[in-house]
Length: 399
Ligand SMILES: Nc1ncnc2c1ncn2[C@@H]1O[C@H](COP(=O)(O)OP(=O)(O)O)[C@@H](O)[C@H]1O
Ligand SMILES: O=C(OP(=O)(O)O)[C@H](O)COP(=O)(O)O
Image (cartoon, rainbow, N blue to C red; front, side, top):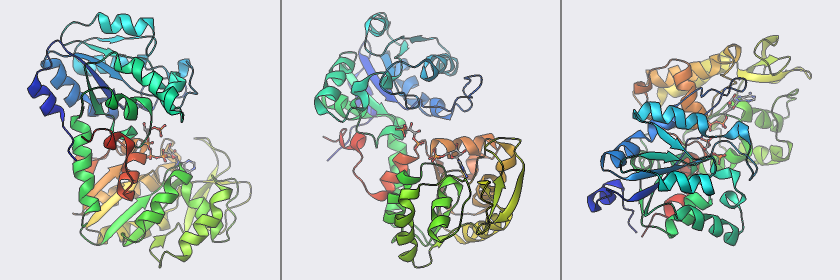
């Protein structure tokens, strides 16, 4: 099995050809203003886009943003992203107000060599995420009509069996973009023979997404540190009350099972910052992890936990971190994420940070990105890669 990459496509010559690029421009937006709060994912795709522009391709970029339900929804429009992408590329980006309709066709047809268009959110169309092969295929036909070749540079979405990721490459000559190639190269260092101790730190809010990963990683890792929104389902499994914290009740049994089989590798918080409400100015205190008051919710790991996690991290030779330790977007609940991130930067271990929000946290907290070995643009994608799963978007690129 081989995967061709962007250099192979460039060597064939792309001048005047329409190149459809699947990017992951799913950037965080400010809930009030709609402004882009972190443009890391836009920057990450620039090497691929710039190379195509310089080679004179007509570049048609497509992406999802958030999780709209298969119909247009203005709060998930990619329009602001087109503006930012244009600034970063130093040339205007033509924005199509639909994904495959009249506006999109006119936009693509109007491109001169070396120009870039961005289509509206792929997920405004049911066919993008449909489980029905025919429905996805019909949408993929429409998308594929906009390209003479296809580049997948959406590492953050390669674990999704979606039309733009899985079905379009079956319809066009296809290659991996620079970002996808680099991500896979780096992550393969963790699946081979990682230098030990190998410490994995997990947090964030997508609890059920990450439980399968824990299961898969347990035999491989030396230590698994769990914080963020997901720790409460584990604390509950240990028999503790968690107040109104994020909880996936139906996963408690699975967590109990994992804890029983973990041979002591799993470290959970011993203290948490518990607040009255999910709000930046909510009253809050540090409480024992087994003593969260019933009316409060845990929004960060506590200082004793940070110290324990930092001690485990300091021993590591290889580190993978996915998911913030708390609601780092609110300064009152950012200390846990900062503490863990700083502990990682102080080691000489090979460290990989995975996940849109984790990468955003590193930047938002003003940490030096170069102190990490690699900052991945994909959270779920990097986790599924480490799990050893077949990733639909990668499989679709193989010849
Ligand atoms: N204790 C918590 N309660 C609720 N949400 C949390 C908690 N800790 C972290 N989060 C939230 O988790 C989100 C990131 O989760 P996730 O998407 O799983 O991470 P990533 O994108 O890095 O994979 C952040 O927006 C953060 O505010
Ligand atoms: O943000 C993303 O994933 P991540 O939060 O796991 O890094 C990707 O854009 C995929 O989005 P999705 O999880 O809605 O398919």
